[in-house]
Amino acid sequence: MAKKNLWTEKNKKLFLVALFVVLGIVVVYELNSPSPKPKSSASSGAAPAASVPPPSGSVVQPSSSTGSDNPAAAPSPAAARPRDSEAARQEELQVLLADTSPLNFAVLTVDKGGAEVKRNVFAYYVPPKQPDPPPPPPPPIALRYIQPQTVVAGTPKPVVLIVSGAPLPPDAQVIFGGAPRPTRRTGEGGLAIDVTPADYASPRNVAIEIKSQSNPAGMYSNQIAFMVQPSPAPPFKFVGRIGELAVFELSEGGAKEYMRLTRSATIQGVWRIDVIGDNYVEVTDTRYDIKKRVPLEEKR
Image (cartoon, rainbow, N blue to C red; front, side, top):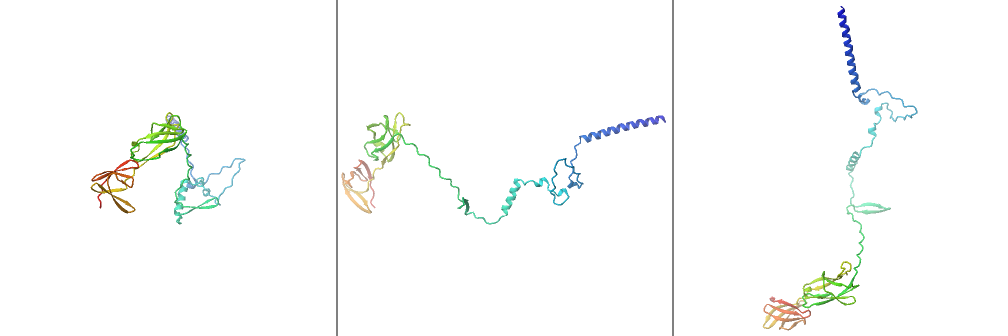
């Protein structure tokens, strides 16, 4: 009997030790586990927690309830927030799409200081006119005139071109078509260059200017055009030959006139007949000493 009671006491001690171990594990688990979130009264239906009295000295704001004692009836803070910009834009778009009233795009009335101004909405924007840039400063040298101003292309003789300008530097030089030419002085404010027949063999305009040889970028003049005109064309036709005579046709005012002329004769006092061939004649414009060849034209 004594042995049986001893084992009973030993079992009690082991049971107590096991119980303390289990309690310790439970306590440690409760301390380390996260606290559960409070459930919403609206979802669980539980009674609301008791209200905590405000601290002494604080003012309690009256409730803005609408007559219901249920706290869930009050608007939540999320519902009281303003709608975001994207939702507002979508709502405005829906309102515009729902409006089916006709629009008048032809004329738009704008109020400007009490006065109504009508504008076409389809008119494109026209920027205001910008002020003109200031004119460049005048050249240091003023080129006044050239003499002669014109020549006839094909004239077989040189021309002396007189250029007048002021103030002229001591090393003033005439520029003919962008190329400097040998220049000589003809007096106060006068310069001269020689223009060869090759310089004006064909019709064109040649720019004439004055520049300083030592300082062409600082001392220069304006430009004047030297005009090379085309040589006159014969106002008649060579239509046949009878022996030593050439037959010419002239047209004036729709009427035709025929002339039979020999060599050395002149037509209209200007065109001298030099050669009479079977298929051409050679004539000279006595005003400019320019020779022309006129081919034979069959008379119809």
